[in-house]
Length: 401
Image (tube, rainbow, N blue to C red; front, side):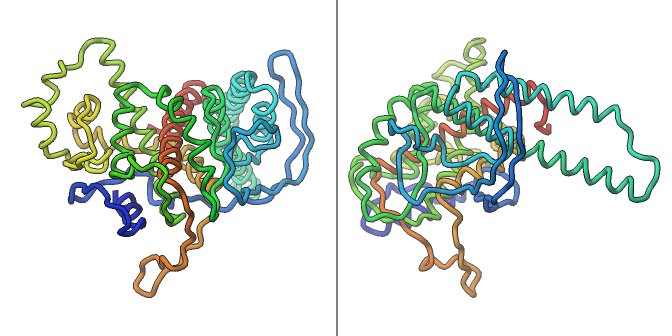
C-alpha cells in the first residue's frame, strides 16, 4: 500500500487524488527479495531435441544476449518480428518453447507435458540413486552435480510457467506490452492499448472484476474520468505498482476460485447476509488488519462494495496470510524477471539518510488510460500465473506446502 500511495503522490499536486484510508496497509508477502530480479546474462546454449506429438523438432546452439527494447512498442503489430513478450527465455527448453509460441502455439501444451514427464522420470531415477558412501572428493562432486541439476530444473520451470502465461494472453487475443521507455511522445499509449480493455474484462469473473476496478480506483483515484491526461511518473514507481498488481491478480484468482466453487455448491450466505447490517455496514466496517492492503478496504470514495470483498473479509488472519503469499520460488523469480524485462533494471541511489534519491530516478510520460492498461495487464498476468502454476504442480509437484 505504501508503494501505491507513494506512486500516486509522485504525480504531484496537478491532480486531485481521491483520498483513502489513513491506516497502514499490508502488502503482499513475497519474502524479503526485491521485486526486480537479477540482470539477465549472456549464456551459451546447447543443442536440444524434443518430440511434440509425432514430430521431432531440433534447434542448434548459439550465443544469445537478452536485450530489452528501448522503445514503447505495443505487441499487437502484424509484423512477425515484434516480440510476443518482453522476457527472452534462455534455457534450451525455454528457447524451444519460444519457437513453438511463434510458429505453432497450439503445440505448446504437448511440449510442456513432455518436459514435465521428463522431470518426473528424472526425479524418480534420482530417488533410486544413493549418495557415495565415501566422504571425500567423490561425495563433494556428486552433491555439486545435484545442485547444478536442481538449479537448471528450477530455471526451466520458471520459463515453462512464463511460456504458458504468454500463451494464455495469445489465446485471449491480448498481446503483452513489450517494453517501457522514457519518451517525450506518449500518444501511442492509449490509442492502441485501450482497444484490449474489453477483452481483458472478459478474462475475469464479474465478482473478480469488481475487485480489480477497486484496485484501479485506489491507484488512479479520480483520474479515471480524464483518460487522455498525461502525467510524468517515476519509472521505478510504475514498475513497483506493476509487480504489486501481478501479485494482486494472483491473490484475486486464488480467492475467486474458492469463491466460485462455493457459489456453485450453493454454500455461500445470501447477499443480504454477507455483512451484518447490509451495504451501509459494509461501507463503514473496519477491515481485518491483514486485509488493509487488499484493494483498499476502507472508506475510499472511489471504492464499491462487492460480494467477493465481503467474502474475503470473513477470512481469519492465517487464511489471509496464506492466500496473499506466492506459493513457489519459481513464480516469484518469474515475476521479478518479467518486470525487469518490461521496465529495465533500475539504478537506485541511496541518500546519506538511507532513503532513495528521487532526483536520480528515470521518469516516463504516460496517459492515465495507458497506466490503466498496464495495471489491467499486470493483474491478468497474476491471474494466469495462478492457473498455470496450479496446472504444472498437478503434473510435476514443485510447490511447497
